[in-house]
Image 1 (tube, rainbow, N blue to C red):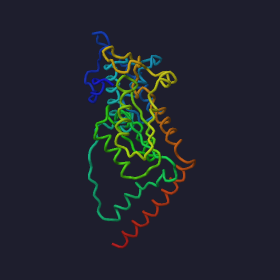
Image 2 (cartoon, rainbow, N blue to C red; image 1 turned 60 degrees about the vertical axis):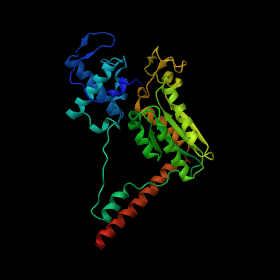
Image 3 (cartoon, one colour; image 1 turned 90 degrees about the vertical axis):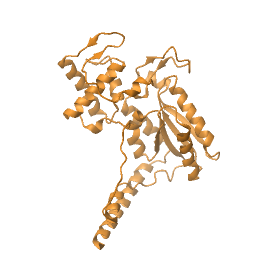
Image 4 (tube, rainbow, N blue to C red; image 1 turned 30 degrees about the horizontal axis):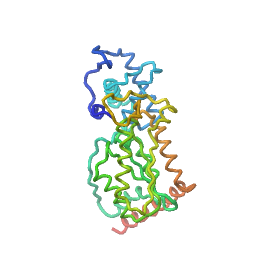
Length: 308
């Protein structure tokens, strides 16, 4: 992923944009803007949450009556329309996934009963207790993490967005977490990242660092489940030519960002991969156990309130 594409955080104020490769300023008519907005709304109604980058790639489909250019300017234009659609109330704010900015909160409680009542909803049964495997998910960017986080939470697996080449400290910390658990079941790591000269090296570098620090008694398998050459052809993902100046990974001819994969397909792929490691019916059984324990905690909270 290029450095310029990572900086698109603030919406542009100018409604115009430049067509890639020219200096010609292009302005869409109100009718064209309405068409583009309707495309965005339809995509989000069918599948949410999605990151702006996911929506952008859906809008580059040339089969759409009003598509956008596969360019930095095209991305900014889609971003600007998403801002306006949220502010106008046409799409809920929560339908756009974004982990790039988050606050740090301090939670306080009036008494122990309120604490137990609030924590009851957070109780999770150990979904992986009966599995012969353990699992965690790594991805190249927070943009991807924001789209797959819901699946990771439901399936009770840890999620690590490494932000490109993971720092030595980050990889060491993750490995030490496993070492301290002293759980020697085989560990499977699913990875999602861009298919470009840098992207195909990130997961190799990450795997190497994790193996360097991981307890030798832990059998780790590292599986890139997206993006790969097969998926580019299977899902007809939009590609860009590699930069001639980039001499890394010469086998990569065309590049594809992970966000080019439709969000629902990405989530389904990840869910299927994780479920393959679980005993049949484990998720259903865990949900029943969670509901029972949560009800018990709520009853305890009521007793505490009554005793005060």
